Length: 524
Ligand SMILES: Cc1cc2nc3c(=O)[nH]c(=O)nc-3n(C[C@H](O)[C@H](O)[C@H](O)COP(=O)(O)O)c2cc1C
Image 1 (cartoon, rainbow, N blue to C red):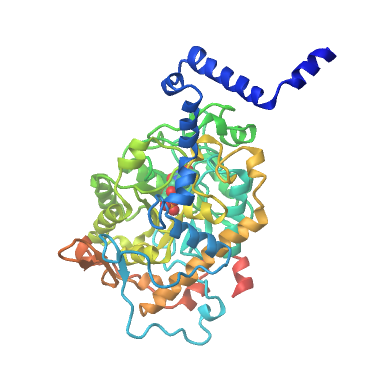
Image 2 (cartoon, rainbow, N blue to C red; image 1 turned 30 degrees about the vertical axis):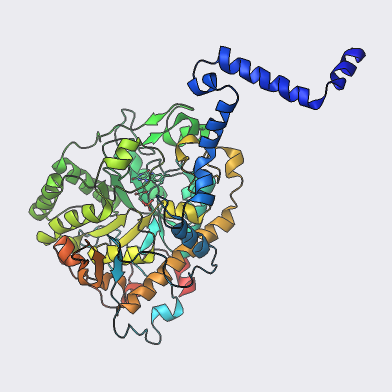
């Protein structure tokens, strides 16, 4: 034995490398049948697969220019990271964007901006921008809700995101008085960390599911009664990244805890059906909205990505006829994100946000219904100038998903569907999520929202307004073409946003339905 070990020890190191490469070459040529490149080019063929796998990171760090990448380019990501860390998020030497480019937007500033008077709520808190409308006020719900922040966390489930990420988001929204939408995966313990919650369900009815896979009103009622953090309920019709497709949670992400919360099997893909069992048409959807609102006392809304508008018209007509309807409508853009979706859906199904939102808002406007509804926009709107555009078009609140993920450490690795998210945000892998420092990340989310609101308010003041709800279509200009260079939103989208009933920030602050309590009282 000793002689054998001595013999092995005498073999030079480079011979070991050659032996290893020889074994790889034999495997490539004779034993593996799956990869032609490795077979035809043994050993070196592996380099191709390796380079391909690290290509996105290489391009992101070394090759792509500042404004090149999608979904979010380097400048956008850096702005979120710097804002979340309360670092210098300014840029020097002027814009690096081609401001004559198609679709570039401009906010028109006033000659003399809005001057904040003494004792104004924004003198004490420069981050305070509550929603100008109250969810559920028109329909006289028992528990109306005024979001204390116009920027909030969009639907992302526990499952698509890790427990540590959900906990960071919830603790973060508590710190900045925003709300946290649960996404389709039900209400987990990580959603109950002090922040306001909008309970969202899709066709899987996770957390409120009856034995036959339908919505259980009984369970929903109990959930709402036991969890006063739930301020409103959102029914998901579709989302921009995959309308017409149910939620997809890959089996690799289904842990024991998740399986228990959702009522599904460990390790097996969870695919929600594409359509709802609880309603089949618009009148039945209206009925469901009313019965949920009646049973829970909460405002009830719907979320959808926009394609054809005939059923939206039917909904609006029915709202006129019955005097009822959803308390809020979330319009998601085709550019929206997802934990997992087929590229054909993510790339092609449903309209981008500006087209989708304008067509739906317009049809409610034509019927005089906009005052009844809180309009929420989502789809890469997590930046102050984009938010100003959205408000000018009629949005009352903005939901952000991926921007919120980035504020807590997501690096846009785009592997949410693999359970291998390197930042621990979109994975159920314990090792990866252990890297998330929840108190620190919750501060980051809160700081991103605060910086966002502060800058949004500064743009609002520059345009001569006290609250962003006062933006109207003529305040924003967009480059539409090369020959007719630039046009205001009113002439591009052919409507004028309905004036929002706004008196003063002080009145909003004094509102008894204002959310984000009681922590808000400590700041103002
Ligand atoms: C990881 C992840 C999970 C998501 N889960 C849901 C969901 O459960 N339900 C839903 O309606 N939308 C879901 N979305 C879509 C977002 O709520 C949002 O509408 C969309 O990403 C657009 O916002 P953004 O551009 O700020 O990311 C998810 C998005 C991401 C990135």
